Amino acid sequence: MKLSDALGSNFAFGGNNAVISWDSSLRSRGPQIGAELRVFGPDAPFNPLERVFLDLDARIGWLRTTGLQTFAVQQAIGPAFAAAGDFAKTSVAYELGAMLGVRVSPNVEVRAGYRYLRLGGAVMAPDLVGATDAIAGTIDPTARSVAIHGATVGVRILVP
Image 1 (cartoon, rainbow, N blue to C red):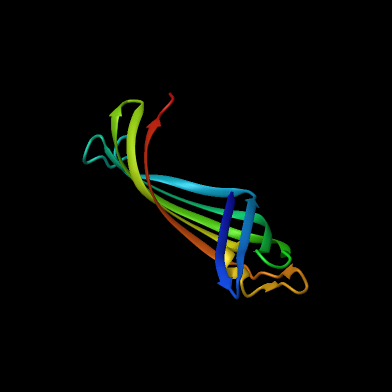
Image 2 (cartoon, rainbow, N blue to C red):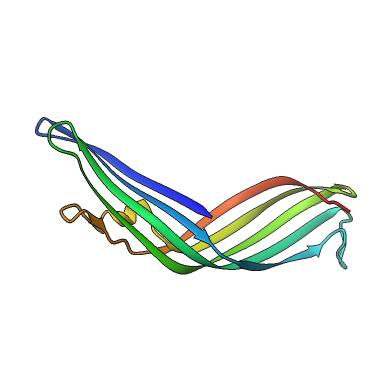
């Protein structure tokens, strides 16, 4: 899993214009395990609506998350300066999903659903503002959890 975030601003003061930016890049790798359940529909013991189905799934992963964070100031008058930091930690991610769909043929399903993903050990750009030491040129971020909500739409092809 790869996640990036950026925060920037443009300040004009005393005849000088400064562009300030923070960037955070994360990469998480590791094993995950999960389960899927067809609540009702084709191929399920309970099939009240023939071709309509409801699927639920859940996954949990044990991840090694690494990140690189940067800070930069570019000025119209005066020198540019920057800071950087990195981190590595073990984190847990979990994902939950629900899909409602219709089997349009024996091998094709049209589906729509909802996904929820929570990643622990993430550092986003706003977290870097208070963690940046521009004098020392370092960033010492504190990780937090990030939640992602999403809608999905798709076609699933079943191979016999």
